[in-house]
Length: 161
Image (cartoon, rainbow, N blue to C red):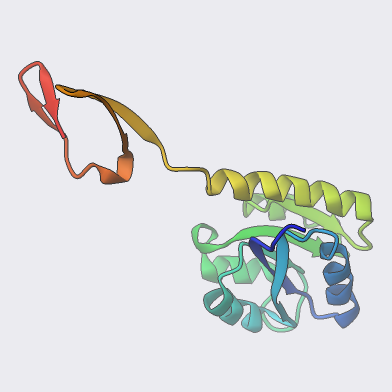
């Protein structure tokens, strides 16, 4: 059995909708539900405390809606966002916020699985192994991780690392 690697936050003001996402997500052991939120204020707080990898975000919630959550948090500081809503008219605006996907309720298992597959590709590419370079030395070749290099300096026809 796969161990949970990714954390999901479920944000919807309807308990039945949150339960539905939990049930759909249960088929994917790579994910654990890090929290559930009923409104935008709770989402903003949970993003800081639980650091989820993905948020399943309803658009219309009491107080702060899904788009306002992204605006306040900024796109750059958001995890992957999958909008989950009963309204199809906000799709273009959702993708303008760099959402990974836009699901219209009720969501079928097949459609949800397709979203999860896209999500896994994105999450796995973000956690790809660190890049390396091969450096020729007087003793042969050495593989260095880019994070091991503090500086590079020209030294005639050579480089000093």
